[in-house]
Image (tube, rainbow, N blue to C red; front, top):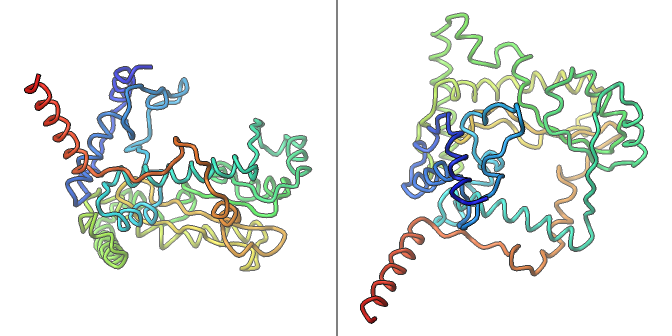
Length: 338
């Protein structure tokens, strides 16, 4: 499709706010994010893509404040910015994603990864599918946030039936089943005094954490965000161990070596979902030494020498402006000579 068509469809879906832009301290970051919000583009080009706007039928609107940086953890994003201060936040996110793609392409090219797509409904009644998965003797299984849509007992039954050595998952909606884990409960009870205390505690915690990590170079502090997001960030850190303990008990994962929190819930100004945390666990015994067993393999395989997979640092907004001014000056000089 044409770039113009892609941009029009992208803009037609912008029905939600994007207040996170104002939370960035550097002007280049705010400009880069604003350009992305208005165009949907991450790379320069003359051809559009249905990936910029296509949604399955009856899938509803895009998620609130949805953006491509939701696929990058704050540690990765601000780590990349700290290592290359000349990049803006969009360029930093693009660099991380291109590195991931390059890594996967290298594994595929080296024959270390074989991709095969199959579809099926994983549910308790589909014993044939569960048996076929188990027969393949999977080393690992990634469940995404599937546990959010089953009872804990049902999910553990499914996971055990699949027979994988190590399981990976994350959960977002766990706060619905833990009392006190959301600001909504205090708001409904009109306990505004507790809300004010929680807000002050959460703000102080976020400011301290961001200062220690050096992220205050990029983010305005205290964070420019809604009160509910700030409060929920503190509540999730306090209460997610409650849900986790119940989950491990239900799955009979009593040995500490059988489970590991890969990524704790953490406040981020980019996403409105701060409750997410990632978990690795094994029913059969101890987990491997690292939460991502494929990482060592990925680092040992060199990416292919294809031009389209070469990972290059994206230019900063200032570098882009200088390049445009130079091009304009060159064109002006060329016309005068003619």
